[in-house]
Each structure stands twice: as C-alpha cells, then as structure tokens.
Length: 197
View 1 (cartoon, rainbow, N blue to C red):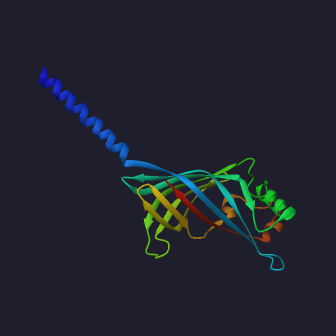
View 2: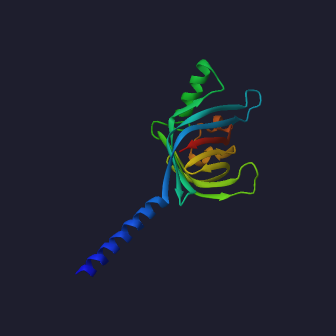
View 3: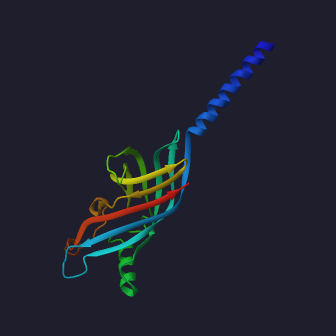
C-alpha cells in the first residue's frame, strides 16, 4: 500500500513539473508603445504627390517559445486612420475620405489584424530579421513579408520594420470611380515601430 502511495505521488509530481515546464515554454509580451506610419502617392505631378499619416494600434502582443521570439498578434484601430501632412479643413476632408467606403470603409471594417507566422534571421546588417505574416484588411487576408530590426532581452522587445509596400487593390481599397482611382498609385508604404514587455 505504501509503495502504491509513493508511486502515485511520484507520478503526480512528474505531471505537475511537466505542466509547469510547458507553461514556462510559451510567454507573452504585450505591446507598450506603438508608432505606425503610412504614405500614399498620387500619379499627377502638378499637385503634391505624397500624403502621410498614422493609424493606432488597438492591441498587440509578441509570442516567445522557450525564450525565442516566434510570433505575434496585432489589431489595428482603422477608425483612428489619420492624415498628418495637411492641416485644417484639407486634413479633415482627406482623413474622412480615407475612412469612407471609397477606401478603407472603417464603419464596416473597424479593425485590421496582422498575425506573425514566422521570423527568420537576415544577413542585412541594419534589419536583422525577415518577418512573415497574414494581414487581414477590409475582410481580405494576404500573406506579407518585410525586413525588421528586432532586439530582445528576456521578454522585452524593440521592433522596427523597414518601410515596406502594400498594394491597396489587394484589399479593395479603391475609388468606385475608375477615373479618379487612376490618379492614385496602388502602392501604400508602411513602417511599424513597437516596444513590448
């Protein structure tokens, strides 16, 4: 009877230790600060050819497995999409237009989501990793990748992407009028800076 008790106690201890080890294997680091910038471009050269602005992060986290950064999940607040290179009425007009159904339709699609699926080392001396993931914008999911400069210390993360390009047509962000849409480049550039802990 005593041997059976000791055997049961030993098995219980092994299970508890295994569960603790497993729980320590996956760790979460929540985003503390964020700066997400965008740039859009016109084709017409007689006017200002670039507009820029920001979008706010609603929530975000990085995922560590056995102390190795392996992934992340981030939700963007598309209702915060704002132009910054203009001022006054012009700024308000462009911001509202970008939020409208002509482009990002934030009433129907108030958030966008990016999930990191893979992080690989890069030989680039400035941006030392290549980040792969799925971006869901306006209900459309596409796989994207971009270089990033990543520094980690325990669960602290400093993350800065290079400026990378998205094709707005891939996410159905275009004018209903094809003539007006022709005057805007399909390319949208984005840069992401995050810290997490």
